[in-house]
Every structure is written in structure tokens, then in C-alpha cells.
Image 1 (cartoon, rainbow, N blue to C red):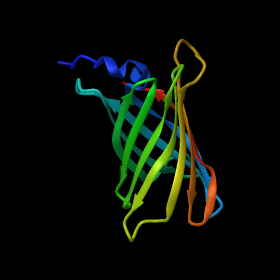
Image 2 (cartoon, rainbow, N blue to C red):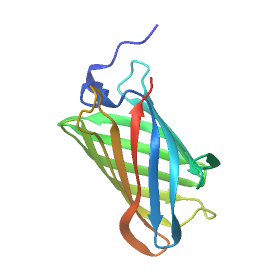
Image 3 (cartoon, rainbow, N blue to C red):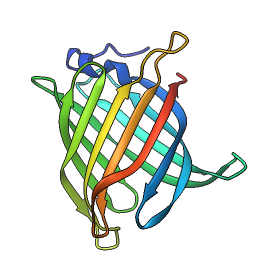
Image 4 (tube, rainbow, N blue to C red):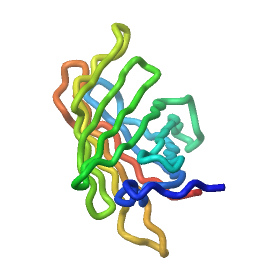
Length: 166
């Protein structure tokens, strides 16, 4: 039985479900690449979303290659359409984002980035998630990620367009 959606999650309910699609990545320290991704937003009746994301390299022939990034966390709505997001990465990085929700769109900026001594030097991030204009009666989820890392300033790193599959 599906738990009832907590009323505090109303501004974020457009994210609920499983989303799959493809995106592109680039950064001054790496070569441009394409990736496949699956993002899931679920809930258990409490006032937070449970988030997970995993991605794979897309080979030149279009086939899925080696695994890339994975992250898990929680999206916690706050008063006045604010949101707090905690993300954990198996690479030794923990991020806390703060931002706002409006019109089926979430804009986030890092408040804290913590890392283990063996993790890559990531110092900041900015994320935008939002529903794209309707096409064939459906709306895709688009997202972009800007990153400050390894001595580089905050700049574009990843973007993807995902279709709702569940």
C-alpha cells in the first residue's frame, strides 16, 4: 500500500517517480562524454523525498558502458518554498544544498561540501531540476549541474533530459 503523501511535500510532488534518459558531461579537466541516467524520487509518508541517482557511460555506438556516478540522499521541504537536500556519494563526498521550489522547478546551491582525505577536491555546486514544456501529453525532467572542483571555478559540468518511466 502506497503511503499518503505528507502535505509538506506538495511543492515537490512533481518529482515523484522514476526518471530515465541521457545527458552530456564536460569539464576543463575531462573529455566531453555522454551518459545514461536513472533518478528515483520516492517517499514513505514522512516530510522528505528519498532520492537516488545512478549513471552509465554511453559508448560511441550508443550502448551502455561502465558505471559512472551514483548518489543518494533526502530532499526536505522547508517553509516559504525552501528546500534542503543532503547527498552522499560513494567517492567520499557529502553535499548539503539549500534552495527554493517554484513552478515545478527546484534551484539548489551548496551550503556545505565535506569530503574524505581520498576524495576528489569538490568545493561547490549548483543544481537546477525542472519539468520541461509538455510534448505528446508528457513533461520530461531536465536538470543541470554546475561544479567547482580541482581548482576550477563553478561552471557547467552535467545536464540531462529524463522521461518518467514509473
